[in-house]
Length: 332
Image 1: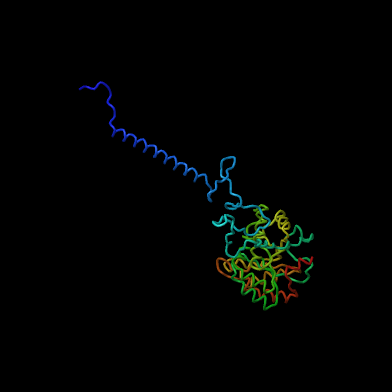
Image 2 (image 1 turned 135 degrees about the vertical axis):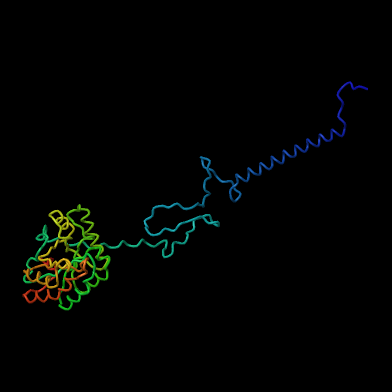
């Protein structure tokens, strides 16, 4: 028979519908509970207590705890211990300092600088001396060292044997290459002078470069155990009023020579041992300054000044002269 309206649900279908409704409600309830637990864990602090927040919404530090310590100015300039938080207290704990240092050690004191050279005597200002004023019948033997040390052993031996002190003008480069040579010259009782760092033509240099040449040489000679102050010799004898004034301003007295032996020319340049001695003995005068060289000729390897030194000393004495170093200038 045909139905006249909607059919009523059967009893079994009703029960199934009710079970589905209950399952949906239970699932929704569990989701809500899980969300609530998650939110509570996020809000809670490390110990289970919610942390305070700043007005900007960022987490504020818990009282009594710190993060990594930030540096702050202190009066102590020594090594500072680095800090980091610990797991037990949350406070800073010093890390061990680097080996050989302590967190409370003061910084090492600065290395004392060289003492200032005395001012140049007014009577020596503006000069490149060619004789020693007031030295009487005395001669100064001087030796320039800028190339090599080929003649050093012979010269030191002759000076010791004849009991004569000389003055050695060293470049800084020579001193740096021959520190033991500097020590031997000083230990033998001889005087040192400054001959610039690299032996340039000084009149071509501006004042700052002149100062650097002199100061660098001074430092190199000092590092080898010597003190060249206040004696200076211009490389090549190249000087003018400006460069002399620049040298004076640095506390140095420029010292030239009375006679150049020309031994540096070597045998290839037409010189000889006897020629060296003849040039010196033929130009003697009170307070004379003799220029000789320590190294060998670069072309023939000769060391004519070293070879002729004994003859020079004996000839000077035979002429009635004695010997002084350029320290005599500091007595003026």
